[in-house]
Image 1 (tube, rainbow, N blue to C red):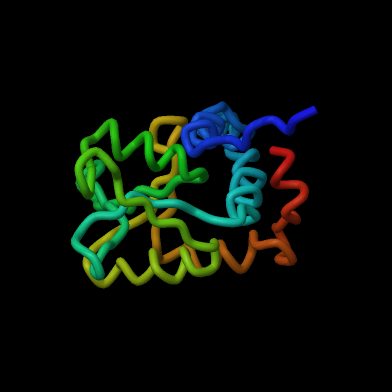
Image 2: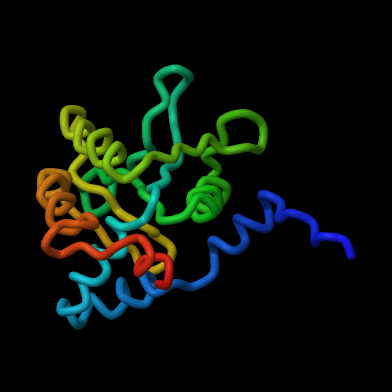
Length: 162
């Protein structure tokens, strides 16, 4: 018996587009703020956050767009979601391929918070799937509170089940 073929990048990206508990919580959070603790705990327990890159190497930065007159870095909870956004909005680095940035959450927090110096106000996650955001000035405290081991955090196994 042969092993099934390894999933391709397209297969993995398609899996990233399936609805998640975070999508459900982001939508519910608009009318029921009591679910936002769970949403943020899951987000901070993820292994990585993903971004669409803009600019020329070596100065590639996460894409920021203006929403309600404020610039937001566009963050994604899965690489396939970042890829989908980049393709939908024509943010393609070379030919038909977007530049995708993936950082461990702690590193992502540091990099994204640093964008305040160029006027970025916040980070907006998973724009096409409920979209939820946070001002960058609050991100370090949120990271401390919701990271695994923090007072509001969950462990990675709990997040994986979401």
